[in-house]
Length: 119
Length: 115
View (cartoon, rainbow over the protein chains, first blue to last red):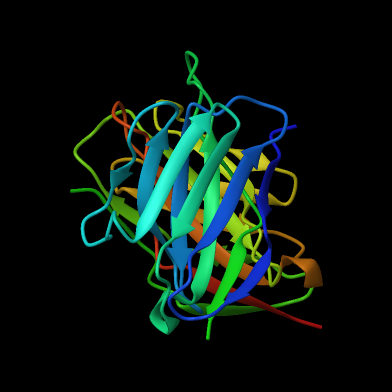
């Protein structure tokens, strides 16, 4: 149980174009999804938190107009990198969190990540 | 603000030996959760073990156990009988009470297992 998928796993796009990354919770409903960015040999950097049906909350320094997040349903969140540039090349990881129950750890289940290369 | 510190960028262990990875954190909360995640070369984040702060007993999952010292704000991971498949980045993470339950990650420790 608790499987999260991401699509695509690897994408190459030209500078100036937009690319969409999907994150799906396959066997559970995720009230909250998170998007991270990870540079080589570094930790995960939280970009934004999204709740189903509401606007995403972006971390300080993350451009909301560049990284568009949509959490349209309890099983799907999308991250769109608009007008991508080479500096946006990175590894993007999503995670999904279920509704907390009494005593639950509110742990996050991670997708396998998407490698974005902007040429 | 809460912080998580992993002071060992890299560790090595001989196969079948035991290794301990360190993690310290800073928080003013009394109720929170701590996690260790493993990230192998595939980069898929895998939950290794979790600890609820209100539980005094240290969590254990097969060869993995933690030493949770709440007063010292320390949460180390012990890997016994190390295997080649344990080689990975290990991240310590904290979740506080309330709010959006965002993880605060440490910077990670790269574990090498020597045959």
